[in-house]
Image (cartoon, rainbow, N blue to C red; front, side, top):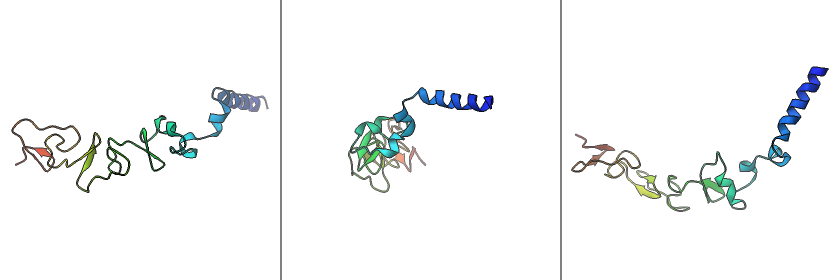
Length: 114
């Protein structure tokens, strides 16, 4: 009996450390960013920008590259808000900000392939 009382007081004490509102709500799932834009800036959010009621990062998202609704082509990735072809772009060879040296070409995502 005493042990059960101790367990319930520990649970109630742990809930007192945060507000009742936050304990009862899951903010990212209950609120959409079109009404509450700050939801996108919470820890665990998929990005700081709001596009079509979803939090995204417009610097890396292929479906919202640079701005909401701008899609990259099938062969392109989003690097810093710009669509680039990582297979042949010397500044983004194989991935974002992976530069080839001077006089090297990017082919199939590798510098000086062949």
